[in-house]
Image (cartoon, rainbow over all chains, first blue to last red; front, side, top):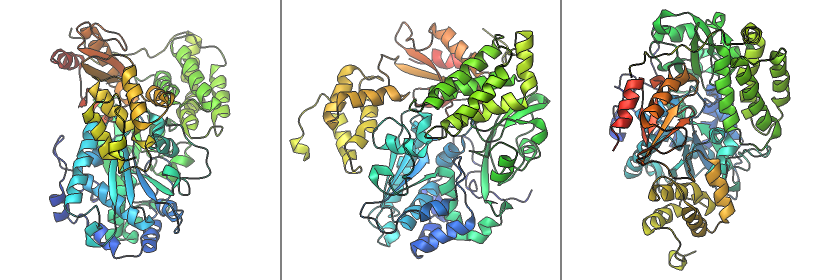
Length: 434
Length: 164
């Protein structure tokens, strides 16, 4: 295979637990040259370049990053902000953690270029509270960058002033939603806001704000350095461009983060990840994190990009691929995800608060053998009432796996209900030694 | 408000100065709330008794109800005593597929505790936790600030046994 990693180029061969790439090694490898080049460009040129690259948000929604930047008003009497979303909490996702742990300066460089392009003098990196070590790694990289004159009063001596801070969350999935994150940053409960106004107009502290995911920003230095055409030449088509990190976990031999041009299929990923665990057969997989619809095994050849997965009724999301083999009970798996969404619903919108909880209750009773005839239809009806009826996408996130189970794997639900028990009882993974 | 004009609050000096250090980086006092609660929780041994919550409210001049609202919203803030070590076992899907529930069982069994209980010697509290973003190491758990992955029930038991 001829693809040469971009985002993981400095970390691909590193041993687990190896120290992150420091500022010296980063610069020796051409790091911060993208920033130096950006500082010689007009901000509008940078935004055009990022737009032309076709870079779409890697956090889940897939919104074009350059377009998002262009929404920031040029004239503003308030300071502008960049908030980097490092709240990685989508079950199955661990790519941003790897990017931070191995190559933190790549992220800082992307943040700095974005700040210069939109005219933001302050960047907050909002990181989930559980990533304690990762927050320390970022803080230490930021200190290095200040000492080297990459951040601070005059970025690379070019007169652009930039302050960068790491802000720790405190354990709430909803803070990965961009306006929930802003509420949390401002010191409140992370309950999403009514939109519009969108954060580009009224974001952090009432000021224009860009919010981008870690992986999205890590792509930016490469786009500036190597050009939009190079970036747009990677991937499936002009709407799905660039390198992509896929997190593969579950029943595979070598779970991990693998970088491919966007549009890799599960078959390709499985090959890289050493195949199915213990050689068992694939039953189903989630292509884009807990919020994505489950796909059956016969979709394993599908290019996993934004549009092909949307066409197949699922989504790329955060590209967290969870693989389930033939021994897996899908009702139990989706029940676990529904339980997660019920726990993480912030509670302010009724369809989400009630819908996630009832999803959990109905799936729980089916799994325990107390399902009632018509429960599959009930789940489908419930999800219809949850979809598009709340302030943010959390209710829809729960709908993804629940509806796909009820619609595409209905025989498995019926079997639970008809036989009054789970046909695939839990197989203990470990031989008990105690 | 000038630092010298700030009245004494119930917060210890080191916490107050850590907050003061951050103040210049945020445009509002309220934005200091999550950092302040993290500092305070560390000082109070991993949880936030009423005096800690009231002291933070006073320091940032926020209504206590606002601070309570925030404390109860986030999973990492605790209003009840916790063990000297806090064990969080992930049982979300990727870990569940690789035996996460058996890890939880093993750890709780070894310590003789159930969800949210503190072991008799005050050493550990154990909770079932949502995805910690380390699914490549599944099944995994977090002990205080450290991740432990590729667990077996045996290894998980040994890790909690070896805590002091």
